[in-house]
Image 1 (tube, rainbow over the protein chains, first blue to last red):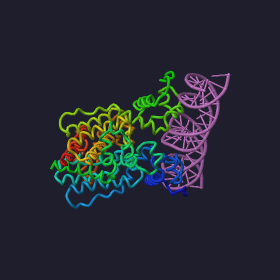
Image 2 (image 1 turned 135 degrees about the vertical axis):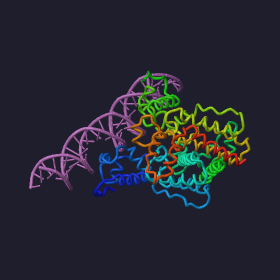
Image 3 (image 1 turned 30 degrees about the vertical axis):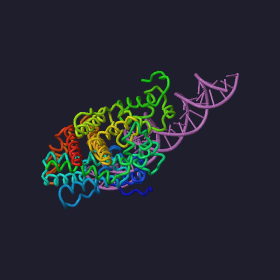
Image 4 (image 1 turned 180 degrees about the vertical axis):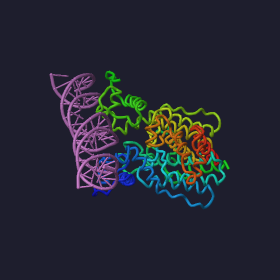
Length: 218
Length: 218
DNA sequence: AGTGGCCCCTAACAGTGTTAGGGGCCGCGA
DNA sequence: TCGCGGCCCCTAACACTGTTAGGGGCCACT
């Protein structure tokens, strides 16, 4: 746990430690003291390298997107755009609570910018207007972030405590089916359709619709 | 502030108080003690009516969507679908930090269900498959939540503290323009397009693309 | 009159982010 | 070689958080 002073304490080292704590304890359990303990230091020492806890979260957001790999430049723009979305989602699902960390945070780290740069390059050379390319990129990130955030959300406080690993979709089915059919005919009728499709196909559905809509612009 | 005991303390009254505190102090400033003070009680008293702070947040989420008004049933399904998205966004922008509250929370309150029910009704009668209708509804909420979350996010911790009311987009322009053009040619070239369009047209862009993509299914 | 449940209280616990101030240690200038 | 200043980490404390334990009024019912 607490190792002998790792020579000197750097921002990168703090970010890496924070990432480990995040993985182990989740976003709610991420505290200054735990991050400090992870690097074998005291909480107050972090403030020499970092202004805030907020700044640690910024570092975390950057570190999470750090190991993003841009899709290969094969196929048409559509396939590449889809693949961008899929990989972004996979990235957010890979690290614990990654979506919550990234969600309300507009990172301007160099690696994030590099990915954005690459994405804009492909969209422009595909024939999109400058304005359309910019908005298409924004659209994709908004959708993916929103989707993963819902995907990882527990159904309710009670269910979260009770069902353990049971994610929202599973429990939601029981809720829908238990509704009075006279008040919510469609919800009851579509209970299976609202719940059954796993998150992968649900995500893919939205992604395809967005790509279709963009294709109509060309 | 603290008024004489408002007769009895109910969950609805707690939800209303929490909503006022949220408006005044933001999500980060919402604490049990402040909500209790708002209803003229002590913090521990809340736990008789509510299990958790998490449960208060659930109530908040429901209260926020409570005053949603479904769009009129005029025009084709497309116009109604668009209007659904616009009103949902307006709702999240109306109350402070509403997007953050609603984001990771799958509410099953009666009013939320009623809106969902109505939405599914329109999509089905427009000719969508049951599965498509369910997914189209999911898609819309994912997009809107993701968009508003980004829309309300400060650029970074430093900017948040410094710029005051300055939202992300404004400050982001300076960041993009200041980049080395040899490393990020597209980002520099598209700086205006990435920043200039106000959030309304940016939102509308994504909304129209999604609607276009859905229309192709019919 | 007594009893039980509802509802709210005080007090405390462990843990949070953050700041003030102290003190080693290292390299630079005299 | 001495002193000095900056870097870096420490201890201690502040005000605050969510949450629980236990006490005690008050009201309705027996």
